[in-house]
Structure formats: structure tokens, C-alpha cells
Image 1 (cartoon, rainbow, N blue to C red):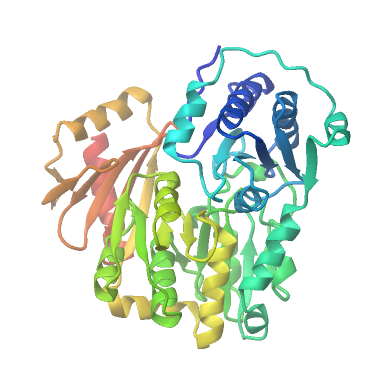
Image 2: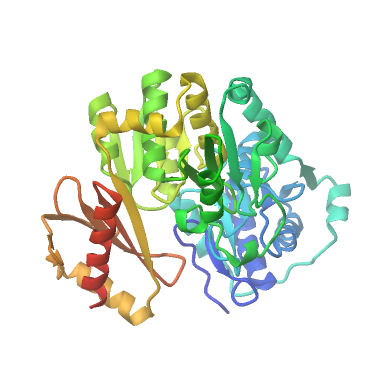
Length: 466
């Protein structure tokens, strides 16, 4: 039987290869056993996004849960990961399940676990569930209508709950009555129905149901969002761009010139707005791959900062236990104080639209406010698709400290919290890390300008591949 391992953010595999009904049953059974072991009245909330087979796999999971005496709240239709996290907390479920592979290519699906606190399950819980996955399991697949009639299954409208929460927490009239024109790219993902309900006349891209994502991995990176960028560049109006990934927990944005605003800038903008304008305080928690400019801003504002391993579950753990203002990852997953301890691309985007509406400033102008504090910078990432032997050899070279320079860039110091970060000076660094869910090596880089970071990454690529 296929061994099943959870990566940085759930179990993910290729549909009809490792990701099968039989294997989903195994993972669902382990999840049911875990929640029964830890809760005298076990309850689980289940949702699925827009990927192929989502409803089938979610209903299969629900049948396994109900067959084992676990009360199930099942989302009506596709939903985002933040909606499932919100619902898990709202309904007092001991565990949440999202059938999603997030930003992975369309051939993948996955199984994320959520905690009763409204964020990702902790690494300890995930390890416990993983250890309980049986080699095989027999489950009687009774019709869901039978469980619904018996009160063991309840359908819930998470999207309406989420939209109501947005309306209570944002000055939507202020945003809608401002001069901001928003272009929103859902990337065919689960956030597609929310923005049209809360914003007045947004320009919508890829806000329809397409489980193949037109063959494009729904990850909100500049290279995947060129249609949105082109729309903004060719518009006669000042348009602000917002994009979310397949399960709408990650964010990407564009300024009025059609220039991409990455997660590092968004994290800095959120800290700046929440602290300087809204007078909120708390610790900032970021993953290892995030810009060092965040440390500089926190020093300027007197905010404590902590750096974690990569994987939002590490950040969420801190948010549950401590007073955290902003927690974020390089990949666009960012959570903020006053909401669930979960990444939420739509929520983050609305905060920045509110920032612009209240100040009357454009995206470029609020970014300049950040640069006035920490200085300008540019970040980029290369995804190197390599055969496994070469990937492992590069990782081993990093462990053996064999890289003393990358072309003309001489290494001054190395950090290895999760991957290997090579610092060349105060403003330039690269980081090398093997993906936990895909066959690739990621190389991250930061420098003072876009041209400088491009040159830096190309030197790194040449040094790594020869």
C-alpha cells in the first residue's frame, strides 16, 4: 500500500495515481480515529475547493467519519480554506478537513487538516494522524442522506457565513465609494464568488468553475498572472490588482502600473497599516524565506519578531498561543490579528484596499511609505525542476558547506533554520530549499533592485547547475 506522508501543508498527490478514493479513505479513517480519541463528542467540518473530484473526495471523507460515529458538518458547494478554518472554529469541531492541493498543478489534489482554533493543525497533531493511517481499511459506504436523516450529517453554508464576517469587519462603503477600481483574478479558485458580493463593480478574471485551471497551477505569482498585469497596464484608469490561489488562502497584488506586489511587500504593508494607522501591537512571526526588511521594520516600530520554519502551521501555532499582529510566508500566505489564525488572501487584500481608501493613496504611494521606513528592495524566486539525484546532491553540498561563493557574490554568513540562506551583505541574499510537495528546488533571492536580484539568481543558478 502507498505510504502517505504529510508535507509542509497537508498530504498532496497526483489524482488517480496516489490520490485515490482508497487512499483518501485511509487518511479519513486516521483522522476519524484521532478526533474520537481526543474528543468525547467528536465533530469534524469538511470542505472542498474547485479541483477535480473535490466533491467525491469530500463526500467519501464524510462517509468514513459518519460510519465511525463522528458528527460531520459538510460545506455546501466549493469553499476556500479560510472558510473551512472559520467554520471549524464556529461549529466547535475538533478537526477541519479541506480537500485541496492549494497552489499545486491541476493534476494534484490534497487533504489539509485544520484545528479547533481556526488555523492549521499543529505539527504534533499532523504527526499523530499520519502515524494512525492504516495500510488498508474496510468502511461501509452508506448514503449521506441516511446520515443526514439520523442527525450525524449537517450541511452548512460557509460562504454566506464568511461574506457576513467580511461585511462586519471592513468599511466596504468606504472602499466602494472611493476611486479604487479593483481587478480580481480568482485563478479559477474557491474565492471566485466572494469579491463580487462585497465590492462594487470589480473587474473579474477567471471567476468561473474550471477544475483544470486551464492547465495553469493556481499560484498567485507574477509569471502566472500576466493577463491581470496586462489588463492593468492597458487600462486608462488607476486599477489595483488582487489575485488569490486555488483555495484562496494566498495573495498576490498589482499596483496601478501593472507591477507585481509580492508577499514581502504585502507583509510590510500590513504591519505598517495595522501598527502606524490602527495603533495595533503584537509580535510579528514570519517564515525563514521572508525578506529581512521585516526585521528592520519591526526594529523601527519596537515590535518583537520571530522567524520560524517554512510551513504556516508553525506560524499558526504561535498565533494561537501568543499576541501576534501579523504572521506570514514568502508564498503569499498571511494572517492578521483580529481574524482567525489562518492565511486568508481575500481578507488581506481587503485590509490593503481599506488602507488605500482611508488615505486616498494608490498602491504605489502606500508602498513608498514602507520604503521610507525600510528602504526599497526587490525579491524573486527560481523554481528549478531537477531529477532527484541532482536535487539531493545540491542539498548535500549545502549541508557540507561547499558553497563559499556564487559567481562574484561571496558568502558572508549562512543561516539554516529551514533550507540554507546565504547572505552576501545587508541587502543581498539567496536561499536554497527543496520543495516538500513537488519535485523541484527553490532558489529565493533579494537585492536592492529587480535587475540586481535577477543577476543574483542567475549567478546562483549557474553555480548550482554548472
